[in-house]
Length: 302
Image (cartoon, rainbow, N blue to C red; front, side, top):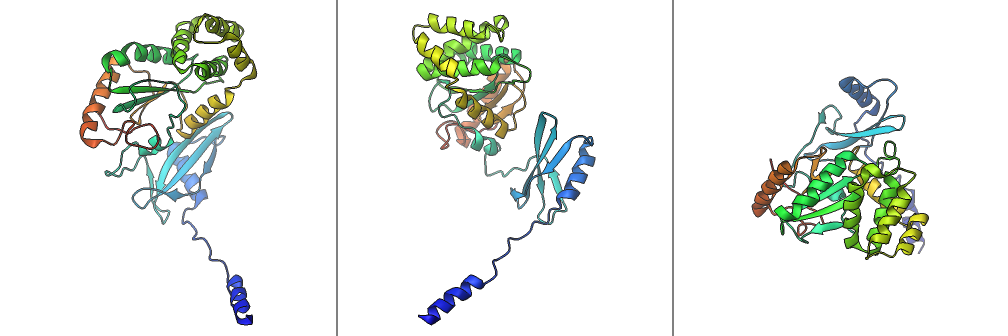
């Protein structure tokens, strides 16, 4: 018994194995990145901890901040810390948009189109954003008419509060509609973009209450309670957090089978992109709702 206790004690007294140190010199990398990108002194630069990346490289996220503005950029660094790669590194055996696909979650998001479609579009948008209005109207008018079975479209709230004062409250209202009747959300979506120019921070509540009273699918009193209590604000915040994790800084930002688009495109461009994606998926089969645990896809086109 004494021997057993002694053995246990001796094991406990062994020095803990030190975690291998990274060869990355954060101060040196910060100085190099500041010079590379001509970053002004007043901009704060924070070098993140290295994590495993592709092709035996380490992934290092560099965070830039200035006042209320911030931006992240990913670099890849060799294990000896002597080589820095700026840009993307791709493994040809994997979907080129897999990193973003892993962050896109479509559960409990408003959607229209065909479940299990080979092409999935995820729109991050702001109800007060004029460019979002143009893209939303184009998508609603053309998507199912052109691709009745091949497309599914999801919507995610990303209100830009610093420039759009009523966008957050409109997003909360939209989620209140969705909570009562998912199909009615798209009536709200079409209505609010159609009336965008008429809405102000002061009249938003009156406007959306009038919408709810005129919608046969909705209980106006229930909608009003939801709006007043901001019962759906956590859902809006979750969408915003997801957008930030995807490094989204403006709207509309749209993903087509994982491919990021940061401008409002004419429908003809969207149509070409979706057709290319459909052709690619006939052989790749690495995107669309059937491929992944998360309900969103990956892709390759142009």
